[in-house]
Length: 173
Image 1 (spheres, rainbow, N blue to C red):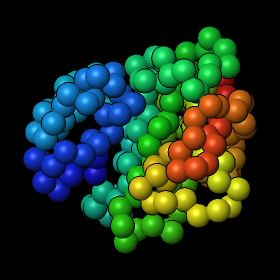
Image 2 (image 1 turned 90 degrees about the vertical axis):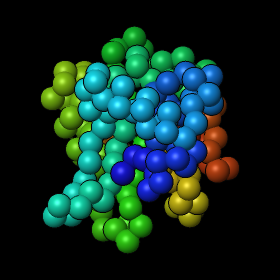
Image 3 (image 1 turned 60 degrees about the horizontal axis):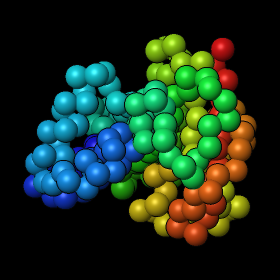
């Protein structure tokens, strides 16, 4: 779900927010999958959604301190709480429009809570109901996070696909 169908393809592997930018840019092809395997030794880097035995969705979620959001200059820290971040919500083609992203976000919240997170943050786009390009929809929308009980905690200086990103937070205590 995280990697490509071809292991030699140079694609995301959901590493952009998990490793420093310089390292991310230096990893190519099979090395990207190998780096994900190394990160897996630290614990699951997210949650999966299933339709029967088939994996149909993925949400990247981990302590913010272990992500690029720990030092991101465009996305502020609203306080010093050891929050978790959810940065990627991906649903396979053919399974979209069935509420899977809602289930993924719910699963990410439960996973963070089970692992002692005091709060969880997401950094979705505020698309004001406009269509978001599918290649950029992985961050989610403000509306998706609001439906899951998150509240807007701050504006950010980050823009994705022409839409501003907002910092959404849910207290888990």
